[in-house]
Length: 157
Image (cartoon, rainbow, N blue to C red; front, side, top):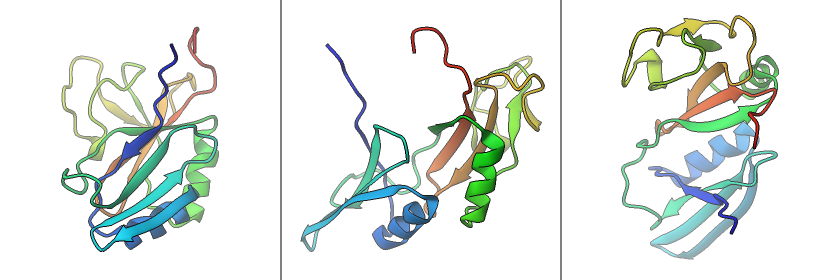
């Protein structure tokens, strides 16, 4: 049986501000539906993704900005960064993890767990290894996104 992740409910405080942000980000608007004063749903899909995000009124009790480490995969992180900057998105510089893969928290360079060889380093992964280079940004509420460069998938993917 296939189980496919289809949608992530994002907690936001201002629906129209979030809608403007994700539109500017280049996500496709799929639905903006209001059923009543206390129920509105806005549904966006990142380009090339089969998984979408949804937010709105009456969607979730989770505090706005609570989500961190939402990953978007790109094949060329330099190109992706230039595109986001061109869209007016405030993104981090590209970084890599000293140990080769990011094993810990992503926001602001802080680490949830930092062991030996786990440290955020400026710039692309030295060998430009697949899964090795990152950048981060947040939506207006502080929900944190990570772009990860993947040029070659691991076996079985």
